[in-house]
Image 1 (cartoon, one colour):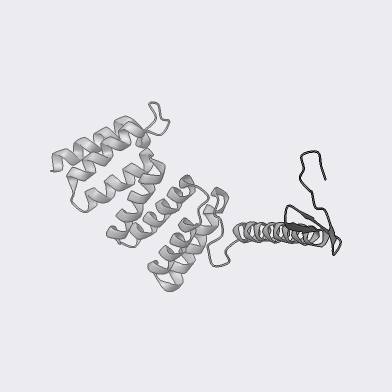
Image 2 (cartoon, one colour):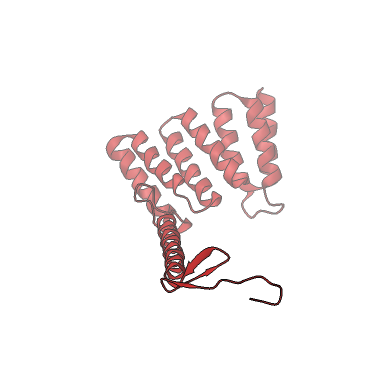
Length: 195
């Protein structure tokens, strides 16, 4: 008995100790530790599996297209267009655009698609691709292509808008006169006069 008059019971039961009415055995403690370790291992394996799934390339998606691929894409698209028609060539470009490594490459692919569509008198498709290219690249050249298509369709108001946009995007000093600001402003003026 203790000084306070209370009796403390400590007894051994199945290599365990009863303290305050609860049985805490070593076996139970080891079991808990084992379960905890197993849960940690399962969690770690799940994390590894998720990381591997995320990093695994999707075999159904288009490969990543970079600027160095543009020439071969154009060759493949032109071959497809020659052998199977312009829609097949445009399909090559659309697969490449979906796998573009950045907006600049995507815009270049759309520009090539617009050229192919224009070469085959597919003005509606050419305009769609040229607008996509202009949205990606924001260059004088892409704005000029859009303006030329609008003008060829007789939409001089839109042609003026895009020629002026091309002039604003053109470098102040250009070695090629057909890509300078004054050239685009002259084209805009001619389109305004044709309205």
